[in-house]
Image 1: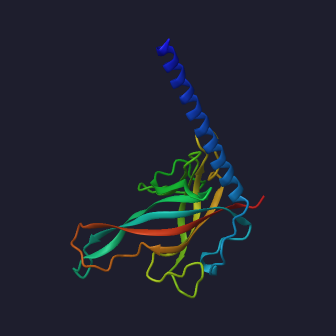
Image 2: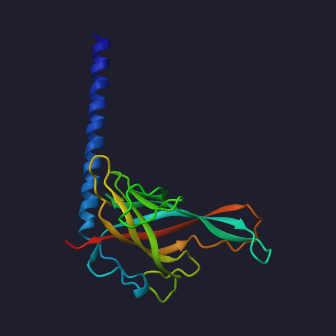
Length: 220
């Protein structure tokens, strides 16, 4: 009798855990959807402005790193080069806590847009943590941080950039959080700049950075 009771208790606990997980997922997805309707990106210089006809629908606060490798130069002096793409995790506020919504990395473009030639090294990628939808993008323009630019004020940090989608893909269950993204702005960068230390050829270094990523899609 005790064995059956224990089994039933374990089964009930599993059901409750699944219910709670589903509830959290639904709340998170609802929060992300709600946030999508309330995003107002800051003013930016024309060089990294998104073309008219596109509106911001999502923002993620990123914590990541920019990779550098020490390589020889034409003068024979070794120097740091950004040979690795940034990698980051993007978060949004959920009930006063940070909730992961997107991961940012390099991957093969599995669904390139017409006319896009996919490099063997792949494209920078953003993948939805909740629905696995993806967007691949390339840099259009960038600006160095300047204290006179409110959306990119932190001198000595990695560039603020405008990126354009070169591929999009829905998640395996039809999720489309990032499947219609047209442009991405990386703003408010802090850290991530080229190391200033001397280096030895072949040496690598990851430099931490934070930034805000704003995602845009075509107006309806």
